[in-house]
Amino acid sequence: MGFRFLNEYNSVVEEILDRYPVLRKRGNGRDRSIELLREEYGKELSDADDRSYVLVALALTLCRKTELTQPIRDEALQAVGRLREQVPNRNKDFDKLIAYLSKDRIGPEAVYRSRKTYDPQWRIGDTFIHAFSQPAAEKAGLSGWYVIFRKVGEYLDREDHHMQLVYVTLCPPGSIPKTDEELRSLGYLRMMLHDHGWDYLVQLYFKSRKDEEKWQLQKIGCFPDAGSPADATVEDPLVSMPFFGALHRNTDELAYENQVCSLYKLRGIGRGL
View (cartoon, rainbow, N blue to C red):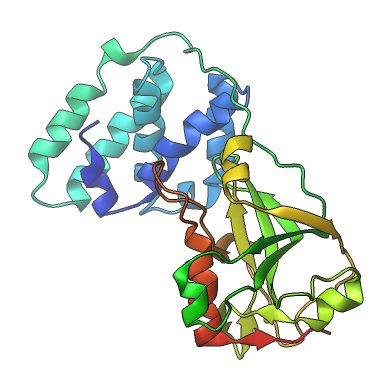
């Protein structure tokens, strides 16, 4: 679009540009989506420094499909005037921005196809294993072992992706757990030190059923009462550790195997309550 220079001063512009299509693809109309964005960014709208960036972003996101409205255009042009006074030496950029927000961008509500993101339908407590297969396991002393993922929560991210929140456990050969107690006794892989405790939560994201299959996970049961780490801090799911499957289409190498081995050597295992 050519106006990314605004993000040098306030990241809210890019956030709104990314957020509006998500709201539309949920089935919201233009007016409702703008209303939701005004609610979501109400704090910024009430801030003298942030307000202009929000108003410009609302106009820019409508310009993408020529569905700008006159009231939003008017607000944006006034906001550009204020920003020009605040941001030095960008007159040419602001001239281009004003030209872009022309009346030619005003139009009827555009069509956005509804989009459904893949939901693996994991329940709380669902537990999956994977046998290590990469050289990193031998170097970490985990050759022949299993990594275990147990779901403990979930959330929708800003793009409506279903993020699975799991605890990670390591299991030696011949010790695959069959009960909550057996799983708890194996402990939990630590992710990072935080506020005098440890973060244990991990995010898993599957783009599709085919993508989930590439993770090579085998379900072994559902253990909702396997407990939690005794030394866990208060964790924020939104900033929990992301794990990844195959990073390239032409490989079966699973990134999370290397992540687990590295974390095991660095952090070790914590015990449960």
